Image 1 (cartoon, rainbow, N blue to C red):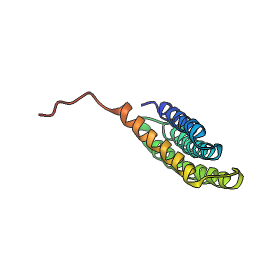
Image 2: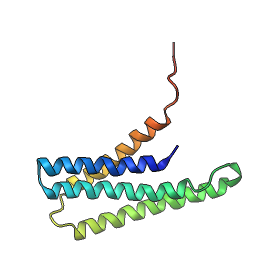
Image 3: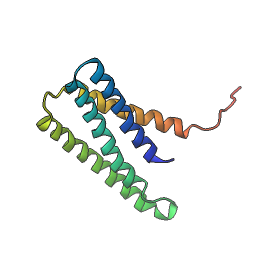
Length: 124
């Protein structure tokens, strides 16, 4: 699996949603959706870099440590970026911020499932 494709989808999806909100509502909502999507994509990107650093059974202990480091870093990055958003974004729409964050996460889940699906099984 290529995690960079998931992160790319998590960047593109909220950007397209933000453009849609820019056309239909206002700039504050679009900016908030985009910020939420960026928070999700950037924190997940850090996790992906850490988690997929090592592979193979001979590196099992390194794999576990890198997953833990990635998950802790992901949480810390998300908290910091949310705090920065609350402090520095003007006219922040909190619902749109969290919606963009959730939307990017759901895109990540969908793209991961789509990429890892196996051949069609004929269960009879």
